[in-house]
Length: 429
Image 1 (spheres, one colour):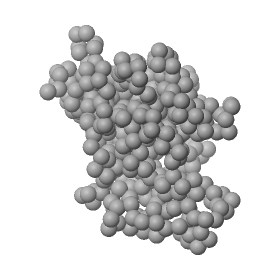
Image 2 (cartoon, one colour; image 1 turned 90 degrees about the vertical axis):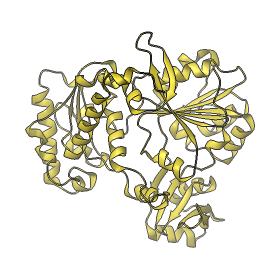
Image 3 (cartoon, rainbow, N blue to C red; image 1 turned 30 degrees about the horizontal axis):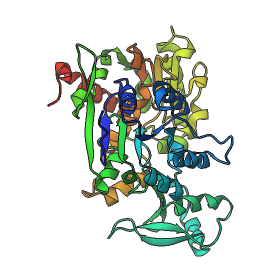
Image 4 (cartoon, one colour; image 1 turned 60 degrees about the vertical axis):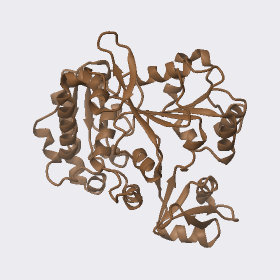
């Protein structure tokens, strides 16, 4: 199999479409001299990849014989080993690690998209103090003509908890927007040092990573997997939504979206059940907890609690948990794992919006001034969460979406998938 040299490729296909299998075949069939760095969201997926690519002798960084996993990673890179690691470790790459990667010539595989922009929780007063005390210093603009300035490490050490800001500043990842918002940004040139980059995801368009590519003019090939209906073999073809969603089409009728009185809690303003509307509203918290309880206790009364899963914003988790489902909480950003593939009943107790400073960054610096489609982002996050359940095995599920906005987005997407009909079985041109 030919490696896609000097290009970024996005493999955009639905959950359970065989992306991991395709990537494993790509790695296993590459030249013996090829060096691979594969990053995945969770440690459980690290073990899985080591197993399916056993002939390539993948290893994972450990902090047993080294001070940190980052030190271990750099030693492995310098030896030219094939490495599988987590997203969080990849995001901590420093200049030394990046230099080794460039020298050794690695191919990168990213399983699920990585963060490209993260708001840092620091006040304007704290920012000014860090700059005044020379823990940080203001550098040049990220892009000419925009008020997004690099924050570099100053000559002074960090002040206690603020030491955490020096490390990303030293790695060229910290920026100051409009003088009052500190953002962590993926280095624009990081992806360019690899021999090739392959990103496996679903619904790439409209995401932060897609916007990041657009802002910084990073060209990419947009591909999906076509599955031969006769042989089941997978082939890489140009992306289109119908082909990318073909696997979902097979099971979409097994998704029951709850439609009943427990949805009343989410009626009203389009932002109702958002984090901002919930955190300081005890009455709304109580109403939502009752709705979640009633969904699991009455609508799903014939199923044991072990078949349930639910999520919400972490800030209100303790206010929303209830008897029969409290212990089945799953983090909001849970992706790329089969750990919950037995769960049947899903409670999605929130109306999800992207972090405002991050949204503002993409809108401010994008070519068209539009930035990210907030609905597309919210929908993508919701779908990823729902497909952690047993629907990925083709088994029926129930989904409770009390937020009217989230429910309408999901139902509209389901209709779009159904509209693909038999065309999803046809090979893209």
